[in-house]
Amino acid sequence: MNLSDCVIPRKVEIPDGAYGVWQIPELNIVIPVYSAVNRTQAQAQVDRENSASIYKHGVGRVIADHAQSKAGKGIWDVGQFRPDILGFLVTPKATYQYVCIQVCRANVHPTCYTLDRVRVYPRRSTDIMCGSCANAKGTENYLAIFKYKGKMPK
Image 1 (cartoon, rainbow, N blue to C red):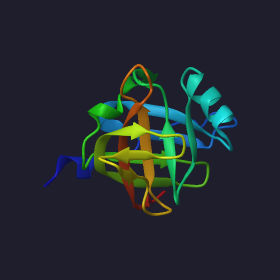
Image 2: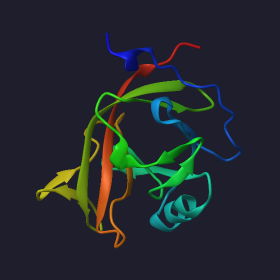
Image 3: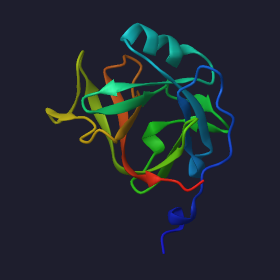
């Protein structure tokens, strides 16, 4: 039995204006996410304290924040994520469960991320890719792709 199978989402309040709250209980990450329609808006959300940005990227979505930002009692350090860790997206309508399937350090380009010249992106519309800078120049990001597992019962 995998102990991460026993992880459950925490009860949270969704702040006014937030899309929802992203949680990774094993790392004490509980961060409000705000929907962004462009890069300027996404950057402003990432720059705010206790705030991450969620936006469309390819067919899926990205949740981005600054590396080492406080995220609940945890720290947003995507380089510390690992495959099989569970994540939960709590929205006003429902709570959705995700499992991490890939973690990597990728190159940043104006329109995409690459690993060994191969694009890295969410493959399904239900996938979420978490990201944060991996170096001071912002030319590399840590990325963690989470695959949708299902809707949690109320």
